[in-house]
View 1 (cartoon, one colour):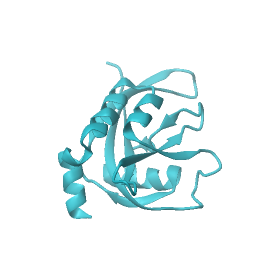
View 2 (cartoon, rainbow, N blue to C red):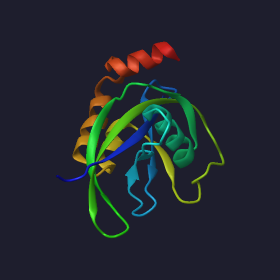
View 3 (tube, rainbow, N blue to C red):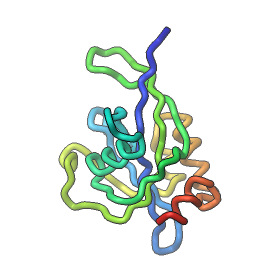
View 4 (cartoon, rainbow, N blue to C red):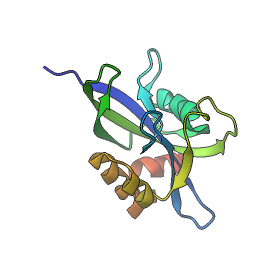
Length: 152
């Protein structure tokens, strides 16, 4: 039976001055593609806390991370030895309070705010595209986001 890698991701978001949802994407270190801050689960850390750490390290984003996932997507992670490991990524939405000027991976990645629709056009994973397009329609109608907005 094939192994599946399990990863977590943060989807940093905020509403701009016009009330439009924006999502923060970062470039991957190897290919420069637009992705969400993501990584492997961390021993002793809850998955949403690990997603919060990834958002801070990869994007310099601080804020409130939901304990409930927004959704999942799959992709093949290219390993150093050239093999592809199928990965399942659990996505945790994050409402950003603050973007740091200096963060751990600032010299290795770019970060940029996009509308969910614009972000969906830039990602390569079909399920992630669907997740972003779902947010483009009525983000505040998503139960996880409604819950987050009440909690913030």
